[in-house]
Amino acid sequence: MTKDTLFLVVSDFALAIQSASAYPENHPRVQEILVRLHRRVQSEAKRLRGLNIGFFRDHVVVDEFPFVGLNPTLTRLIERMREKGIEKILFSEGITFGELKRFVYFLAAGTGSPSEQIWESIIYGRIEGAESIGVVSLGLAAASRPSEFLAGAEDVLKSVLTSMVAERKRSGVEEGRDIVSSIMKGLRQEGMLIDRLIRMQGHDDYTVTHSLNVCILVVAQASHIGLPENRVREAGLAALLHDIGKELIPPGLLTKRGQLNVDEFDLMKKHPAAGAKLLRKIDCGTELPMIVAFEHHIKYNRTGYPKVHTGEPLHVASYMTQIADVYDAMRTYRSYQSAFTVEQALSIMNGGRGTEFEPRLFDSFVELLS
Ligand SMILES: [Fe+2]
Ligand SMILES: [Fe+2]
Image (cartoon, rainbow, N blue to C red; front, side, top):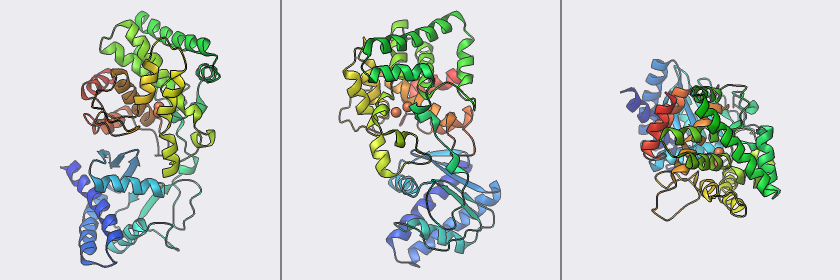
């Protein structure tokens, strides 16, 4: 099985880096893993005419197959790549044992990089501003992750959020409700509108913001599973406001290009609680926006953030928002050559069905998009 073979490649890659940092150089254990890894990388790079490994959030994507970092070695690999700012690695056909070994030791080194690193059969991309000889820029410096940034929000959405933050409470909420109501009205009046809205999500020059995208996708999901209209509207409003806590994250961080480092990511992790705190002070007519803001990065299996210690299920609107949130991020992600297609995004997300995502709602989402 192709997928199993690719999983072995990435597992051995993770294991080789881990062993290289734990054992002295040329220890037989490391050599043994490196020989096996080289054999696997070489044959897959030949078969696929180049072997691509990508790192996206807590997934490793090998060729087109996603793997969630469920075992500690894989999780550690994803973390290490995040620390190094590496988002993508390409191994070319004909990679030698020597070069692969040198690369593994380079990745295993705690900080910095050995000087005069020149790679012949390896290309890897890292964040802007990193200073390392031998790093080939894949154009990542010019990349941005617009979907995560409210800075790129459409005017109307900006005014909703700004007025809410400025505590001109009611008008902002009414405006948010109007947006959702008009979406609802459109959906009711014109069945095809939903298809058009969904197709609109992925245009390169899309004008819909991340929050509005997520709102639309949540309204669509909630309608699809047959929730009554008032609950659909509530869920839509909550989805629209899910990232409101990002208003409290320094703008420089929100607009930073490339991968966030560990400290920055820690700061970013505070936006759900910050959003809930903000929404607690605002009368939205429902507590749902506060709940969804708090819960939208907590996964179905309780990993993610913030950490919660209760076994209670999350709100259904949080599960739907989380699915829409990840989907939108993948459809607009620019650090790879291009955004993922619908099929790729769903295939990658399918790896998180039942762990990251509530399985029945995920199935319903897939059904909605197909
Ligand atoms: Fe978020
Ligand atoms: Fe989001």
